[in-house]
View (cartoon, rainbow, N blue to C red):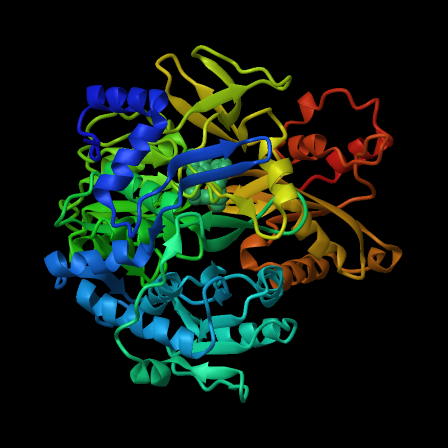
Length: 635
Ligand code: PRX
């Protein structure tokens, strides 16, 4: 018998030990007892980190939508599967039952088929947080098409890059989106992107804001009439456990975004298992994760993990600040939310406002609070614990990544005692290591190092789309036989982990991963810019904000700096999206470089952090003299 739901600390340790000693027995039992397979696997696990090649449940056959939808129909067909809360609180919420979800997913799947989409084709989804978004993921999965969701805040250039990288055949979008007081012309962004993408044959358009948009003949089609004509029955495509389920792009420290490929069986088992345990999920709960489905958190913990457990999962279209700072708490009261999962940046933004926005609402339905995406500082942790959880709800600080597919380190509520700012203990099946800079594992407690994982877990990404070599180099080359996370962590005296942040050039701004290279490339496109370098610096709401050092060409010299700053941020918005805008831009005569010409970001980071006393040895630089002038001109 598997221990599917851990209830106390002793049990956690027991299960954890079993998962270390007998990983295949551990995962095999969970997979067999709690999911529907058309055929069981030949082997639970086969792997070789040197290639790297990782296969879980190889030989097994399944369709993830049978697990997320069909198997629930008999027992909970009339239960709400997706609870849609619109941007505007005056618009009515929609309760989509499992029966209705089944019909809508099947219809959508038939539309995809009728439009020529087949198993293995890539479909790009660029939608706001409306039910069609979750439904389109499931419709792709129903027919074995690989979905590639692009967060609908990315610019047309960023969208085009991602469509081209995966050679998507179709884009699913909407006429526009609501975001607080604003409306956004999503279709216009898609038009600009698709003009550069030869692989796209069809653009399906959902109606959301009823705007008057241009539809390109032969390419663009309104979704609703096609759905109306489609049958509500679509036999699921039977997939291999290792067939790709989706691609999701994440920033790297260098180069273009990486299309992380997740496969079907292991991803399903791990996201469902972690959802159940980390949220202490029970049948009548109403669970709300405030992330966007454009990120991994939404894939795993709005769509697949909750639905595989037959849960009610809330999809929120709006923003935490509209119509006022009480919106989250109003929704918690209205839908009697039991588990609430958000990001530290949202907590910090709301904690700055008056407590009246919280105290107006009855939050007594809450049982478990979650946080994800970046380290949570002590102050935010306590604010969340005191004012939202009323000191009664355990906070699950969940550490994981796009690449890990599911949660890796987290307390299990009512079992693991929590500790502010600590993600605490590895979840069952997760074997961690802290490594030093010489490639040695640091054993024992009260140590810090680079966080690695020593053994495969079922939901790990299997490759980078179209570039397995890059997958190997990025994750499996820093340390032999280990997956390297890119994060630093410390382990305290009882073995609890605290994530200290990225050790590479990825900067997490408001919980969004941003690589420095694409932002610098965008800035350098400005005709007045010669060179640039970006670093992060601490920000009380966003966690980190971006500080740009920019060298101007001669043509930029006499120009008004404020105007240039605006233009630079405009270019970044066009190339990546508003999330990557710089908070500070300092124009400088030079950038500190090593003798081999590499920018010394360490020094720039210290200056941005205002830690000038501690710059280290700068005498070996190619141009040590620029450091003084950068300090003089610091913003
Ligand atoms: O640095 C870690 C940070 O977010 C990175 C992964 O970002 P992404 O792939 O966008 O996925 C975010 C949602 C899973 C990690 O390498 N991170 C994530 N969760 C935490 C965290 N840092 C500290 N504490 C966390 N709980």
